View 1 (cartoon, helix red, strand yellow):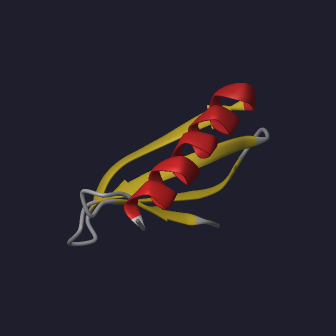
View 2: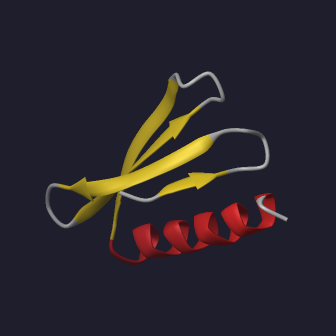
Length: 60
């Protein structure tokens, strides 16, 4: 369950979802859940790739 930190202080956590999906849960800096969405296949892979890049940029 990787967690990605964004430059605005928000975090996105990923987890497995039913049907081979990936659930993405976004939290604000205070820890409240802002959204929870599930993507499948290439959509999930592309979003996770973008989160990896955003997290690396936030750490610079």
